[in-house]
Length: 146
Figure (cartoon, rainbow, N blue to C red):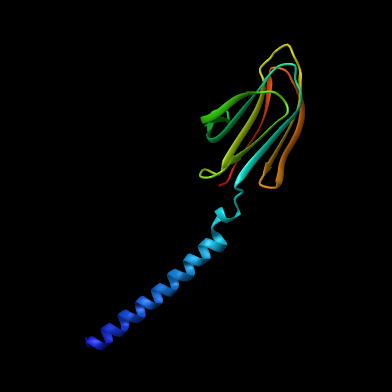
């Protein structure tokens, strides 16, 4: 094969490959990459009244277990921050790098009712707003990007 032809083909092939890779890379980063749509922070606001301290569990590292025999699912905390709280309370949690969040408010007391309103926002979008009267009970919000 003539040396000029081999060089010319090689340069053209490299240029074409570089153009295709550049276009593909740009498309992946701006169009198809789902992380471009991810919220960056989760914000919880807990208000209401309680004669006893409540617990707030916050986790960005959790998984889901599944029992194939009975079809039940449950959340398994891998790492969590649990704090005793007095109402009202607000917290903001960064979602990166796992892009998942779990907030759980617990009234562990079996003798006293707590009237609790829990609101959750992902960035500026409200995704959860619920009020409950709780005794020895909990309410939670969990979400993950997939």
